[in-house]
Amino acid sequence: MTMHEDANELAERVRRVGLALGLDAVGFADALPSARTRFLRDWVAQGYAGEMDYIERRLEERIDPRLVLPGAKTLIVVGLLSPPPHVAEDATDAGATGRIARYAGGDDYHEVLLDRVRALESSLASLAGVEVSSRSYVDTGPVAERAAAERAGLGWIAKNSCLIHLDLGSHLMLGVILTDLELPMDETVTDHCGTCRACLDVCPTNAFVEPYVLDATRCISYTTIESRESIPEDLRAAQGDHVFGCDLCQSVCPWNQSRPRSPLTDPLGLRARLAKREEWVAPTLTWILSLNVDSFAASTRRNAIKRSGYRGLIRNALVAAGNALDPALRGAIEGYASGDDSLLQEHANWALARMDEAGIG
Image (cartoon, rainbow, N blue to C red; front, side, top):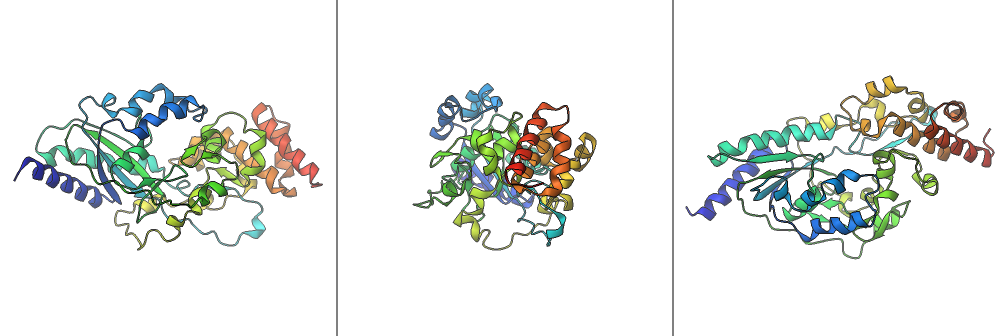
């Protein structure tokens, strides 16, 4: 067997182990900089990263993975499909509700996926029969996951800047292992977006500067999760009922309408762990606005929603309340308007002004 054949066989062994660990996709890319990662320089320079200064702090490492792990030759990129959206039972009497992103509301995907990624990483030395240097990340390190996934053949980066897998769609959570093992790259996937612009047209905040370029500072996922500042007033009405993240540009994508083509098994219960907890399926704004710091911490334990922070979630819910125009929420909103938190005061007063303009007593 030649060295090339050995590398191919090793890559397939790694892939089989990854799939056996419950991952839905495993691919391989080289660790060199690419046009996609170099684009980050211009993207950050345009201010599109907003408050996400952690991107700029380690920008060069995101561009060149070899700066993260000296001697890195291969990126092993894995994907895990998030569970399908939970359809809430009729809750018309419960009052206005807030919308939560599909991936959130269950166990934090960072923890669920990282556990699998590290298990795969720990198997590399025994699979290769040599000492291996490696590092692994799930959205927590200086790695451009989607760019790596595209180069590893897991899909193409679409006009909404999400990665689309041909069979699984775009609701994939990604992890990356950097290693000094030299493994063959998988074949890349052709862009299948064509002339479709459904994702661009559905965005209520016009966050796409042009196809494939997202201004994160206008994206609901950014303003409701990443930002710790006031939500720009010109974006609040467009936020609608979103209180944590947004899936609109993925929901309308034709490639998600019938994906996956066949139901995926879940023998290790990974998707079951990610499924929304009952309180987060269709949380009422009344309930969210009743949370305090302690009850927020309890209800978001090991849950991605904790990323917004208590103040962030209440801020988001106040905007959603201002859009809901539900008179039952007025008392809760007034409580924040008379409170001592200036950020929440501002958003509460905005919501009350919306209700006053609509004649909601």
